[in-house]
Amino acid sequence: MNGYQRIEKAIALEAVDRTPIWFMRQAGRYLPEYRELKSRYDFRTMVQTPDLATEVTLQPIKRFHQIDAAILFSDILVIPEALGMDYDFREGGGIEMDWSLNTESDFNKLSVDAVEEKLDYVFRAIAQIRGELGTEKALLGFGGSPWTLATYMVEGGSSKDFSKVKSLGFERPDLLAKLLFLLSEALIRYFRRMQESGVQAIQIFDSWGSACPGVYYEDWSLKWIRRIIDEVGQRVPFILFSKGMGAYRDEWISTGAKVISLDSSLRLSDFTQLPNRKFAVQGNLDPALLSLDPEVVRKATRELLQAVGPTRGHIFNLGHGIMPTARLESVEAMLETVEDCGA
Image 1 (cartoon, rainbow, N blue to C red):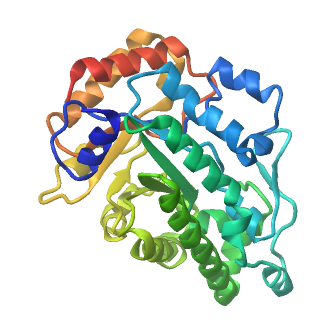
Image 2: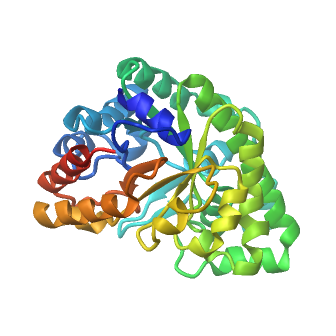
């Protein structure tokens, strides 16, 4: 059974020969071959150049044969960019938008017109990667949730307290709803074209779901994710990740996502042992482990797999993105352990 088939069967809750593997984000910051490429090209150039995006996407697959799916090299902020708001990276880390949404006229500058044409470089990269992968490996696309993208656009970049976007929701719920509708419409178009171009699954990163006050989590975040999955989910399975919001398990399930992705703080058994479960579970090794000794990684990986047991519908993954400090020998130890333990 090849990697593509393992992923397909795991999502369908069918038995597989071993737990399928992918990384939540594998942009390759820990790989020497990625660092060499990054020394010659800036991040956005690599994202917007199909040949370079293809090369980066395939780097982990070429190095580690155990990985069953490649993850498209891109960024969630290509959507705000296509709507008219460019992004960059701050010197000290984090995201910086070229401008922020402050007045009602700012919101009116955004447009979903021709969003597919503006993001054509993404779809060309997907088609190119799909051709290089052949039928042995799956290809995953991804995007940010409308709420997560809205936080960057209203705050003007990364934020510690999300005060501006919360104030907008409290004081002008009509404007926040307008923005979230616009973003969900752009994402629906984007994800449809992703599927048509060749991805086998799409992950939605609700990375800042935890910035929503609990009483507003449905209205500010989940209902827009639900709309996207309602519109596109019949074409391609969706994976949902919302860090730090594990108390909303039932609400996550209600979105229609075929895979629920768990961060490292959650117990897999709280999800895998639900009666009549109709979704697969992804996760959730702590990525910090990959910066440690390989034997520590082997032990933690075995413990996670033992906790899952023979449960169908588990996809091995990290609880968040792989870190730049990850050691190659520790990544290899993790993958070898999953391979040795079988399904």
